Image (cartoon, rainbow, N blue to C red; front, side, top):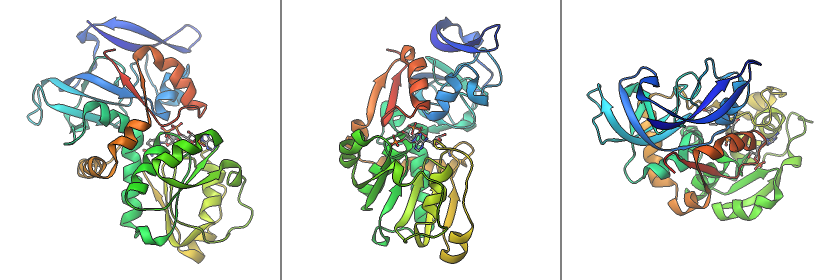
Length: 330
Ligand code: NDP
């Protein structure tokens, strides 16, 4: 028997989270069983922990947790053997397949990557899906010509998970980073991660007024979407790129095509869920070399399985700073 946070649906159709002991026979089908060590809390986890499952959870009972790191316990796949350290992000694990909020998980070997050299399971989950996606965003911006001399790079939702890791990586790579935040009290935190300019959320969250404003940003990692993304597109420097990662501020994009047509601005979509294996390895390798571990430690808040219901609500309210690391054995 092992501990798991199980979402169970009541007669009113709403789900609640219950910390339970369950047996291995309850685990879903898969060819690798992992002893989970750490998981984390991403925005999507907040949705999966909510009473309606955020439209992501299809079936109850359900174990959320969209990512985890741990040790292979048994494997029917040649690529993994007992004792191997592994990481999982994406593939709709924690949404449609049982996830990492348990001491064991059974998954498909195709969804795993070996724990990157230089990272512990705890550090891998301090990075988690949020940080992995930040690295994909930085790689996409570089692939489209971003280099440190081009000018300041904007990070929206800077004090959140995606934003914190993006800020630390970009600053470490020598970029001048401007962080947009709605929480003025996080200024010291963002500066410690390497941001040199703090932009108040109010300065950017109004619907775009003019299709083009002063050319300001050489690149942008955008975790917010909505009117803020529309506004940022009109402030990009000629040929600059925005990596669209998230929708914390809304899914609608009230923008014009003018920045694309007159300034050659690129809007790059970033998806971490179905990312091909080779690019996953490339991103994790870059994380191990380009994200300073002292900065990573500074953004971490530890948690246990029983903390998760409250943390899920907090992240949906934009109240989580940096990254939460869940020790599922604590
Ligand atoms: P967090 O909640 O940790 O961060 C989001 C941040 O956005 C908040 O901390 C806050 O930052 C800011 N924010 C929240 N609400 C608003 C608002 N109404 N208007 C403007 N800013 C707001 O979440 P994550 O970092 O885990 O995820 C961020 C986004 O990225 C989510 O939408 C998530 O779904 C998406 N995502 C997408 C992935 C992909 O594969 N494309 C993978 C991972 C995440 P501050 O307080 O600094 O203003």
